[in-house]
Amino acid sequence: MNGNEDIRIGELRQRIVIEQPERIGDGGGGAVESWTELSEVWARLRPLSGVERTEADAIGGSVSHEVVMRYRSDVGPELRMRIGNRLFDIRVAFDIDERHRFLRCLLEERDL
Image (cartoon, rainbow, N blue to C red):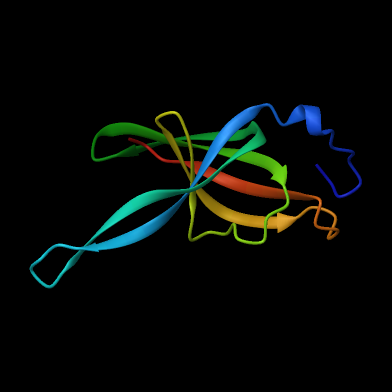
């Protein structure tokens, strides 16, 4: 997709939850990281590529995806996205045409 591609609102058909990290004290001076819902948005999710790798004698993989949603200024690599029980790390987020209409995020799906 390039900045000149026309995006239609009707293409944003999937509900995606944007989550933010939250540090919760463990009572012993440390903290545990938890994730809380920041927002739920309509978006378009598309797979871009897949990679298979071997780690510790087991086959694992990661799939890169692209998400397009209405523009938000608060989305970046410190957040993650969730669809059902699938989790995605945000690698980069940018304003497609620098007009604050749509945001494009490149994601990597986490292995559960």
